[in-house]
Length: 294
Length: 257
Ligand code: HEM
Image 1 (cartoon, rainbow over the protein chains, first blue to last red):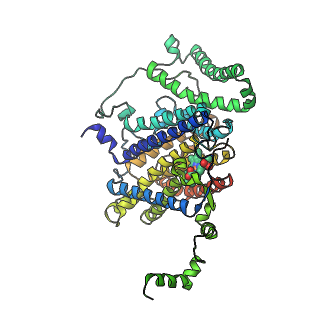
Image 2 (image 1 turned 120 degrees about the vertical axis):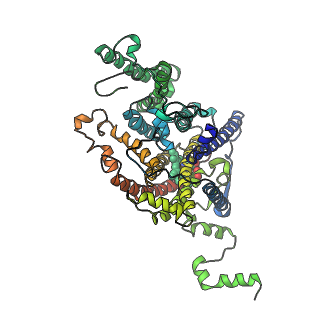
Image 3 (image 1 turned 90 degrees about the vertical axis):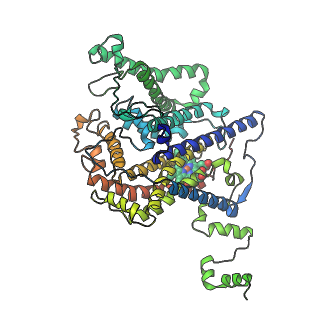
């Protein structure tokens, strides 16, 4: 069978296919409504739902809930009749499968292990994702776009969230499920998995690019400058920019909110940066210390 | 006497019927309201809702679908518990029995497995909808936070369930996952700075998760209890906080300019 068909029809992967279909559908629906409302706002008309009255819960809402519940039940029953949940061989601690994959919704995090050490990819970044999500309502002080789909009124919020949601979360999951084979090597869906394949990728550290041993003192200092420079620069640069371009906003935003938002933002951006460094420049670590490597 | 309306009238006058439904339903304003607040399940709703709440395009019903997926998982999960022992010697063969011995065992297991995938998918879409409508903004900031915890709990429910069949898939997924615990800064034996706290493989986060230093009997028991008791309990409590807050925050959000 065509390896691509084989991969997407594996029982557990059907869920990912369903996810991609559902997410695409609802994304289009959300943005379509957002653009529609943007147009209405532009000409000063009320947005969808602004002048709505009340209806009785019984029966209109109760009825639609019942219909949705039945539809979900039918869908899951159909899925369960057509596809059987797999059961692999009994657990065997001496036989490590290759690749050993985490459950699909954690594959984005497993993918990060290519770019970051486990303490970052597996512990610090996931914790910051949770903290960051919870912080959203407190750092987004834009009063507009509350209770209706819109895009123009909250571009920065939507673009940032979408980048995290679609690229850093969903795309990495899809890559982890469909494009990663033995040894966590990249396989195109039409390629056979080859367990004997070894790819020798000579990675280097940041300072070695400049001929400095990354484990020497000068290498350590260079790494420290680059990493801390990124963190401090990332903290200060937007401040300077906002101070010049949007001083009233900065004032209203406040210092604490600024620091929290910027920390979360530069952490998030460190992921694509590290990916490019690794994939394009084959750089593994930027800063090697006796305690941890970044 | 034998025509259907007669029978209907008699049933409605019967003392058992009356004891259950208490009053007749006459499609008046009062009775429509009574139908909601007189019913313990329906009274989660307000008596009246915005027109938008009955149109699919705003919420997509996603929060409700997530909750319904959870109910299906609780029901199928409880039935599965009748057939399952959380021990290394029995778990795998219990699942095999579901496949070959238990009537409708395959469908039961499939429903639970695909229902779990489904819930994870729809909870993410629900979060996306809430974000896109800006419904986390005041006064709903707190409820968004409750939602984030529910999201994490949904992942945790699914993750702990992975180990229970005790097959290669679950065993290694849990091995990979809990190895991350070992990398926790300060508290995992491979994490940075852990040497300052004298952390070893026998007293770190991973050990606490597994009830040992490798994935074995204790880990299976822990996963099982987290999966079947502890996380569902916390989730149910938080779901009710979540629903309560949806109402206290003024119902489904509406354009607020
Ligand atoms: C087990 C998981 C969850 C369940 C069962 C659940 C259920 C619900 C339900 C039934 C509603 C009513 C409106 C609707 O259907 O959209 C709702 C609203 C809401 N949910 Fe969730 N939810 C869950 C997770 C989440 C998550 C992950 C978030 C966000 C991170 C979230 C944030 C909210 C907010 C802010 C509202 C109010 C929305 C509005 O007023 O328009 N919930 N939830």
